[in-house]
Length: 99
Image 1 (cartoon, rainbow, N blue to C red):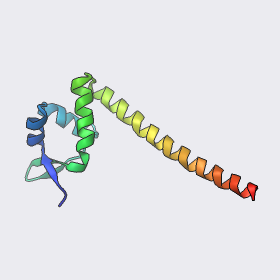
Image 2: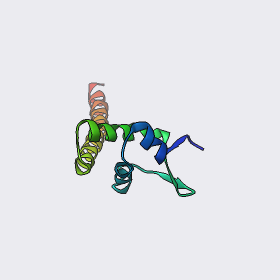
Image 3: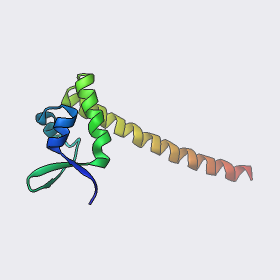
């Protein structure tokens, strides 16, 4: 089983409200695994959680703002990937004509 941390541990360690964590889950920004009615966040998802918590508590960004920022960053990553693919295709086409 992958490493995980319970919601209650996260609340204590990061000094956040349980409602904030639950709102992240309800909005689909975080995905949890539930076992015996205990919600767990996988360690691999900790960076996303920390980023959301920092934006919310340090920059005072509300949940709708977090959703917008997350969506925009996801779209930017998709565009970067598409740009790489197009540049590779262009390079391959350009290499054909140079032969």
